[in-house]
Length: 93
Image (cartoon, rainbow, N blue to C red; front, side):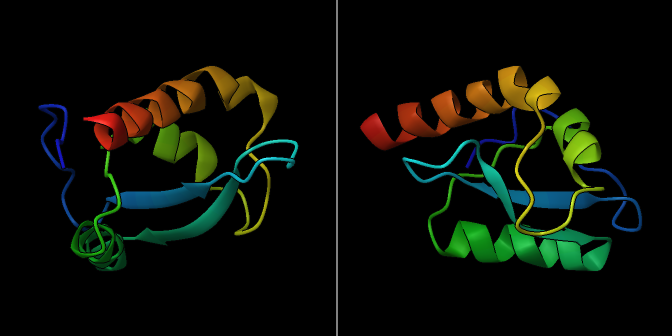
């Protein structure tokens, strides 16, 4: 999947967050998260499974403090909507 031209962070600082949304829920939620080498592994597993990956460090930083299962806060809706639009464009391609 595209990395949007961004250089990856050093593995010790890298963070990965997996988001999920199902119709009927009030917002997307944190499905998984990891930091450091585990973040690299989470990204690798997602790619192996064909899950679209978008490297967006600002979003990961904003959402990482949330617990797995927590809904994305309203202040992140705009950027999360862009992420889901990116995913939809890949699925429709």
